[in-house]
Amino acid sequence: MELRALDSRPVLIDQVYERLVDAIAAGALPPGHRLRQEQLAADLGVSRQPVSHALAMLKNAGLAVEQGVRGLVVAPVDPDRLHQLFQVRAVLDGLAAGLAAGRVAADPSIDTSELQSCIEHGFAAELGRDIATAVDWDMRFHAAVNALSGNPVLSEVAEAQRPQIRRVMVVIKFDPAIAERIWREHAGIADAIRAGDVEKAGTRAREHALKAGEETRQRLIDQARSIAGKLNKGTKRHATRSRSARAV
Image 1 (cartoon, rainbow, N blue to C red):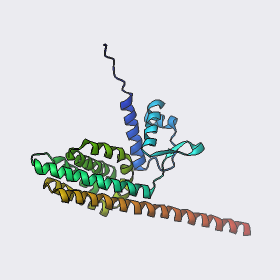
Image 2: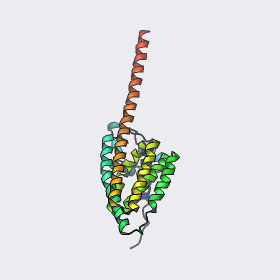
Image 3: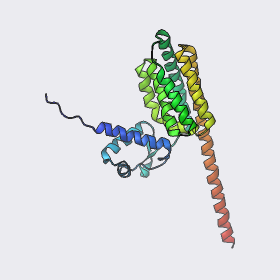
Image 4: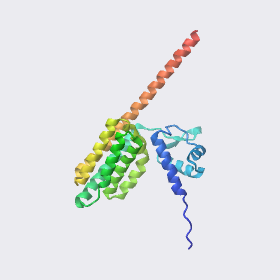
């Protein structure tokens, strides 16, 4: 049988998808933003076909929704839904860290250097207020823990959640105090894994995820209230000016 050249389109589709996820996570494509195939294709310098496939992937990931006549738009952020996602992540992270520690306890020669590398680079990015890079290293740290667990299913399940998690990580990383504490917690998880302490590694990972979920939920709620308050004040000022104009 003659071998034919492989179709490179799936790779391009993945690239377009990742670029859109990054844009949504960074706020360049905010909630409610219309996702027009033609415009996105022009912005990214590609044809409409990979954009169409990438938009379908965004829908499956919960990052885009159909909104009547407006078509496909960036999905709103639901604080309660994200909190529930972090609750699930806490279980998975605790399991991954515990399994990783168990493997290290059984074989101390297992290479755990990726954990320290992520912590050092991530903390440096945090201190430099390079939030996008800090988020990348944060995601990489958790991926490294999953890999060390020796259970590929954990990595697969975590990968499915990654776009949603990445989207909201920037919310708490805008607070330097919280962001720096997160890296100290990462260091504590890594220490427990390297020590082969299954219980401590699992507990620290679970508590880390639960705390992050609660803080993210509260910050999203506070942001929504702040925006609503500003809109309400603007509406009241407009109404006052309208009444004054009519009186004159």
